[in-house]
Length: 138
Image (tube, rainbow, N blue to C red; front, side, top):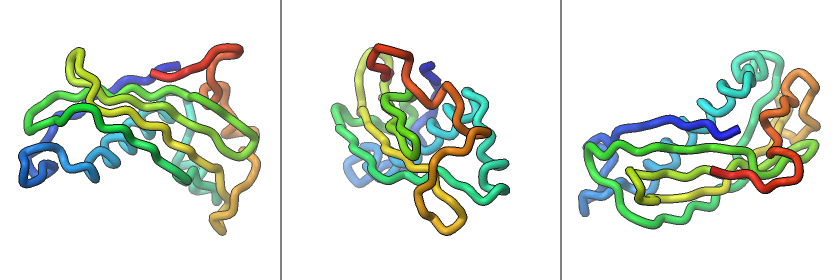
């Protein structure tokens, strides 16, 4: 499943060159991952209440073109890989036909102590896995 959401660049997210600051992209990607989890039926607040979390273990971002104030960006998120404890979500940010950035985000399911644990059945949803026998990604 590919989940798509949009954000509009705000002035305070831009650096002295007038481009979106690289740190702001982390917020865009986080917002889109949360929207992805909601879209697949993952109840994140319930997971937290039960003493679990989904931590980001690694983010790889490749910046392609700058975005500027008032640009409307589309962020697509899709599962790329899933294991018993962790997985990878592929994300891309576009403005129209322009690829602005793409990212691979490795996540891990953790217990209340922040230790990686096998994803419990209540949260081990099919939407966390890429489609069978094909590489996923936006």
